Image 1 (tube, rainbow over the protein chains, first blue to last red):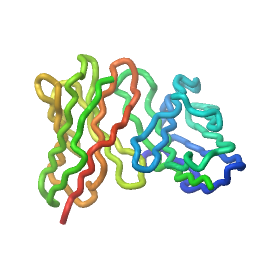
Image 2: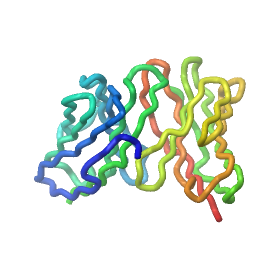
Image 3: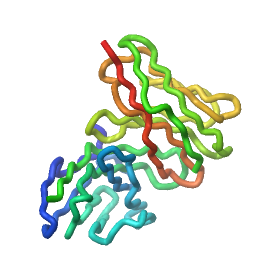
Image 4: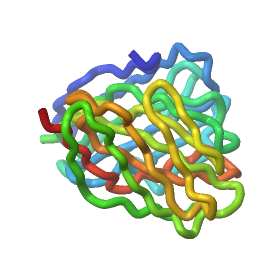
Length: 115
Length: 110
């Protein structure tokens, strides 16, 4: 148990569906991250939030819409996805987004399949 | 951020030490070396990090060469549960952004 909980663990959706991924951290951290891990590819950073403000968007398509209502919760809203968006989506948190000593703690991920 | 180079895979026998190498020849003075691992279908797990001194914790030891151009992660007594992909990452002094590469797949055999 890392203190970072992601739900759901598995999700199957059609290309016209709208769904949301949820991440919650119980570590008192102020920075939260979304990563994507496609099959046989390295993890790719998607978004970074620091003290509820988005500080990084790594050229992610607009069909992925993040939301960070408070420092403990992070959502990824999905709509009109493509089959190539099927991947493991990982959430992480760290004390804050500044400096190199921030250890990131990861959730177990949501395995998304887009049909 | 400096890039890292790791062999694609290695194996070791259960109970023996696993020494995982990493090259980071372009590392700059304020960049840290971090190691994470990812067991199949789980999220990455932090192992250890260091700047220039060797570090040890309950999971592993990190040996950084004096010129800081390479490092070795040592798992002193590997178990089957240590089978995973291990990522060596150089982190900038300006932020805590992690850039993952392909890592090294460690297979621990009985």
